[in-house]
Amino acid sequence: MKQEEGFFKGVRDQRIYYSHWLPEGETKAILLIVHGLAEHSGRYMNLVNHFLPLGYAVSAIDLPGHGRSEGARGHVDRFADYIDTLAAFHDTIRNRLKDKPVFLVGHSMGGLIGALYLLDRQGELAGAVISAPVAKANDNIPAVAILAGKVFSALAPKLKLIALEAADVSRDPAVVKAYDTDPLVYRGKITARLGSEMLKAMRRIGNDASRITLPLLILQGSEDRLVDPTGAQMLYDRASSPDKRIILYKGLYHEVFNEPERDRVLKDVETWLAEHLVR
View 1: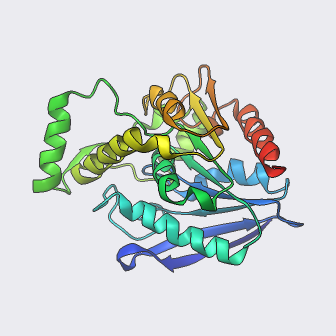
View 2: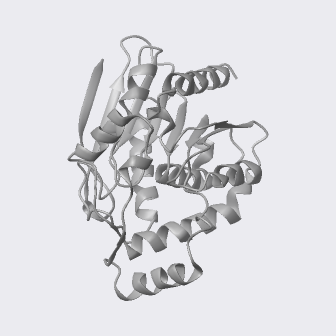
View 3: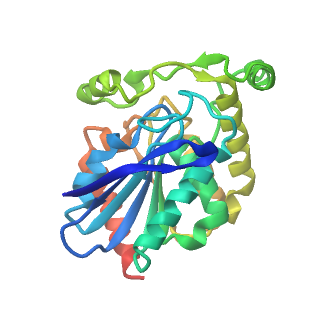
């Protein structure tokens, strides 16, 4: 395994951590990973270890305010900061490996970021794999709570509101323990501004998903307790891609790449990628 890591200047002059993993032989394609809320790119070693021996390069960043990157934890001034940072990183990859197809792999909030990214730059990608996207607000969030979030976003944007439950990421106790003890995982609450920005981003993808036309694979655990699983179906139904597929994994939690059945999930992605390399 050949790994290169470092930092680049992102939006607002923040130092953004990146990592490239390169295969030993010829590179077939590049997987561009976009991680989820409160976590970091280092939690995707299951993907790296599976796809590197198959000839795929893997590239990832820690989003602003996440992992080793600069930025307030659990907060963002505008959701576009994530998308603009991803765009800057993607440009460096395209300049470095110009003749290699790039597949975006976005998980959770990274799936929402990735879906929005496709609206403007899907022509630069060979396809996208979206896992457990934050595409739809849970129906059990009261309207008054959403309204309060909007008010606080304007008046007290850094007010801390909610935190994620570690036990909901996976049914594998080892994964939950590693998540809970990882110093690069943010275990505090997210701010009113970030919550409000995520809701606006969800509304946009709900309205504009029909503009997505590239090959699309969507993965979703049926027992996901961190996002509404019907959001994945909504994204699938509204995308205009003539080549699209959704896989609902019965009984799986949020992080399908970190569930006990991860080998089956990774094999499904491997098969889909191989089919789209020859087109």
